[in-house]
Length: 85
Image (cartoon, rainbow, N blue to C red; front, side, top):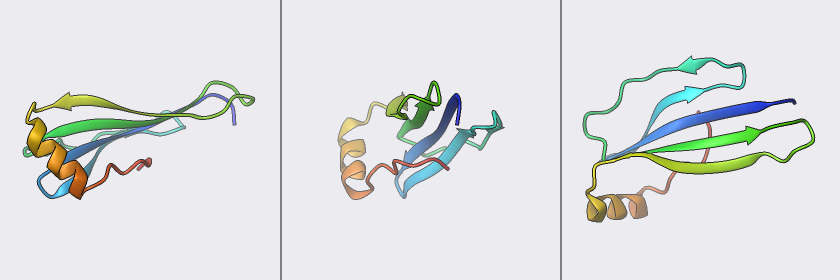
């Protein structure tokens, strides 16, 4: 594998995590509708810059409602799905 940059956005809702947009290794962007009841959006990303480098895995907040107590409770109930779509 050469350069690879894949990611998936995950939306935290009152019913758990919902899959959002994703970007595949082939460069295809899959767009999905954002849930109206989302409280948090995180991006899970796997990046490999060369065939000789290790895959770097990150997760970053893309958007937040600011309702930290509610988000914290929901994240305890529904752990973040650290995976690509």
